[in-house]
Length: 299
Image 1 (cartoon, rainbow, N blue to C red):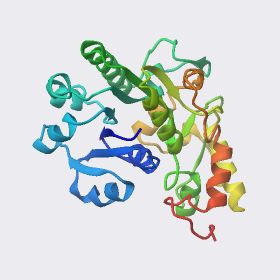
Image 2 (tube, helix red, strand yellow; image 1 turned 90 degrees about the vertical axis):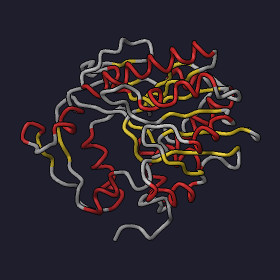
Image 3 (cartoon, rainbow, N blue to C red; image 1 turned 90 degrees about the horizontal axis):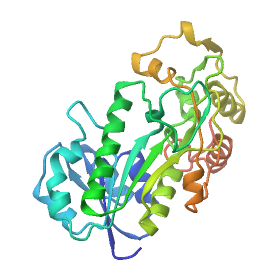
């Protein structure tokens, strides 16, 4: 994809994974809300720009040359911050634009009592943040129709990878095994978010895609598997009813579903890590589970 220019609104954990996987496939700009993060973005291969909800000359200039736009900014009470600030620019001043990707969440499906859902399932979000996501998805799809450009909605499950996983939590003492009978979650390694984005961008494919693994599983099983790799005792199980949780953490357990991923597979993508066991095995073997840099195994 040489000659392409990518722009990521909200170049956080997933955006940096996308840039690291670029292999020189094009220039990548990315925004952050703090100049403190500029160095980390540059190290990932991203040209950093500051975005605090308002257009800037630097952002506008980069967008004029952008072919592929990726949005990874959560909506708020006022709507989608990128659309609110940049809609006019996207419509009228992005002549090179070919494709838009919006990173959403499987939370838009709401609670299905542990049943399987795919992209055809009704969105019936429970939490306020997921209700806002449904509205943002709708607005981006509408913009795509308005300007005649494909929009890919990537609905992501629980994101993990180097620096953000149960191995790290075990090492720093924050791992817990909360048990709520029947509760399962899907997950997705950040490298597969990056891989799916690159795959869809390669053909400018639009549509809705669940980007999630093949193995919805109880969260306590993931911690136990990580502990088995380290050779240490897993933390004790804690009944969900008695656990001390923040309101946001508790709200995640109010939604229970198994999320299918056939649409992204039908588009030709093959997961690098189809389940958490494959990913943890690889991260542990490579020693890059802390921050992406190989180090000695946990002592």
